[in-house]
Image 1 (cartoon, rainbow, N blue to C red):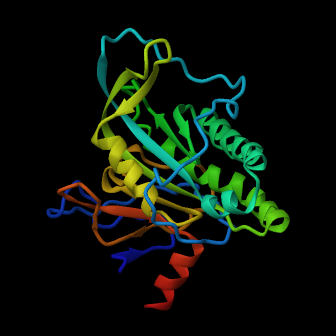
Image 2: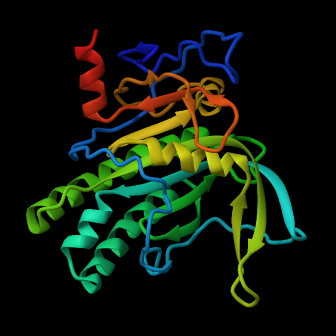
Length: 276
């Protein structure tokens, strides 16, 4: 059950733990409309054989430079975003493999361009998912607001694509997104000669788990992200959409429960309103 439903982004009971909660109020944050049907897909991000990682989607897009001057690993703070396509399994089952490739590249291109627009950096694309970081190595901002704005822009940009795919291929797709904020390690990983900088640590793991729990057209974010949004003040001058606080989640493999907030998919919001 949701702890609260609000008409503007008012954060009630935001805290970093399970007790000692404090009420805060945030300014309006743009969330955008989600017009894609919402198949629920709770499978983990790495689920079964997938098409190998590709960087074609990003093309010649510029990305914020990261000076790789660290040795082995460097600890910093970032807002981590995981985005995953919902309905991909049905898409891959219905279409020839070669036909799936350009569709995935179209999906990646949307996510990559939005990430760069909001000053984020794509760290990993594989299968039907992406990991990006915001506010990386930036002591002046947490990256939480940029990550949330990017999340909602991704939902908006993919919605007409999903509508077209449904008409052409009779498949229902969408995007589920998870956000978490905290300490990450930047490190070079991969086989010799093919290494890339990526983000490692509990923050990235939690963002991935939240993504796996998000419905199509939905953003799930942690209490840490909610608190940072409050601290950073007013957001874009757009009409706000409701945030809801969900029950604490027990994430697979993690010992502590997590405070979770949601920019809900229409299906979840309708269910919560009906249950009142």
